[in-house]
Length: 593
Image (cartoon, rainbow, N blue to C red):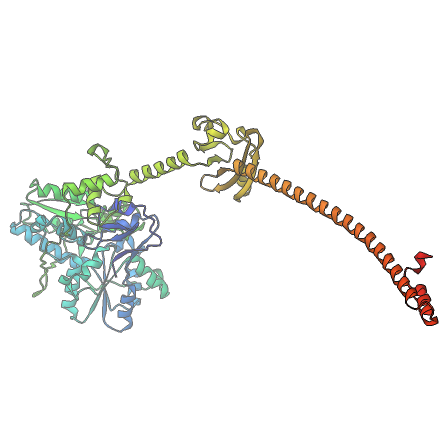
């Protein structure tokens, strides 16, 4: 797992972490930030400035707890910054509380610092180095190894106090003992994992993790029995966490250091300025205490707001800790605190001028005068960003002026070319935006419209409905007879502006066409009805004529039948009787009578 990672869901491409990172070890890919470990010196600035708290710091708390649970002998190396950042009024009670967590010993990392101080003094007495840069800050060491490898010969070939202390503990208690370091430094996590120090420090915690651990175990420092540290008094070496503390510890040892001038520098930008000056050969014969954090360790990225300002902390330290040398802290026989440094410069392909110009042109910078160098993207110059884009560590969309101009041009393009009327108004119905097509319908150009209110154009009823209810209107048909205009309107509420945006579509022509079509259909229906009515009249007349002719035909046929009966058997009684019966029963008999 990375020491510092990013929670993608919370990273909101604000580039604040990149702006704060002086070594630009943060890549922006697909609008998400990611730490480039090959460039990161673990100063922790990105952790402290992230407004979304999207950074995730690797924790060794579970590892430290497992060491205790396993029953292994485990020693806690407590950074001297505990005096200002962790302990209460009685530091001895804090030590007692830490013992209750299960550590077999609790020691001050300042014990290792005392050994480191002795090594620094020996180097100054030997006088063989042109300059001597302290190597107690792992972040400063990483900075020089990565970005100023030409200054590596000036690095004091000595391990940090944390590593020196771990060596000392294992030398005294045995190689099987486990060491847990607690302090405010993120870079200590990487230093503990460095193959050059393999197997020395098993876990690195910060003071918040220690506090959480004690709270989970129900341990209150103020209720704990006081207990001393398991190491001799390191005296002035407890000053290491404050600015000037290393110089003070070295000076406390006195003799044989006069050939080197001594000074200290803290903060990334000050350290960069120092390295540039030293690179140019402007500084010689100096012992330099170099710290990446402004205010040194007591105001490191994991100290948060503990202890107050760095000025208060320094005053408190100077009050608590006398500037006296520790009693003989020479390294034990057979224990070497020497460290070799190496170039770790990140290898990245470098673009030629043509490639840089092509990338700059993609962000609208056609000539050098277009390069604003505003730094909004996180890089100090436009060319720096172009180089990062070439190296696939940045994206052209990070250029804020370019993105703004592009968005503005697209917005203007929509307002200028949209065939529909677009109007934006605030809660007071003041017109905030007005598309060019509006002049065709309302007779007012954009300049005039932006000085007017919605009621100056038409009834604001629909706008007020959206503004008051915050419910959008979709597809509502509204007619404006005064403009001979029929519209279809979509009005949406804009919560950020507390206003409303209306898209008004002219449907006058289609409505008129629909009306004409409707009237045509009505005429067609009327014509069809007339045909139907006429057909009904004809049918009735035909039916009447058919009825009359049918009756006449029946009468005639009846008469014919009677005649035939009389003529067939005139003299026969039977035939006469049948004829009479026929006449009596015939349906037309009554009519004839």
